[in-house]
Length: 67
Image 1: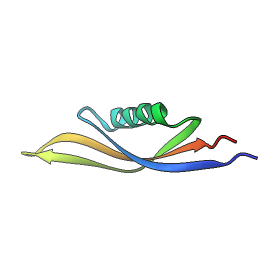
Image 2: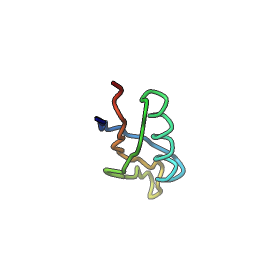
Image 3: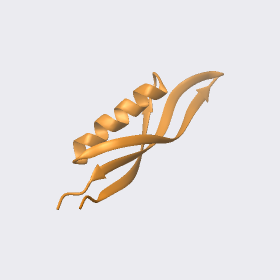
């Protein structure tokens, strides 16, 4: 029997949403074992003086629990 858990994290990037997702997954795999997937639950941008200054994503990361 396989049991999975889902945890929520947020990640940011000054470049793009894609980069924020990659940063989040890369960081999650340093702490969580058996990561099998992630999906973007939400995304937003920070704006200063009419320009985007930061991209932020909220990820739901799935990982398999060990026996």
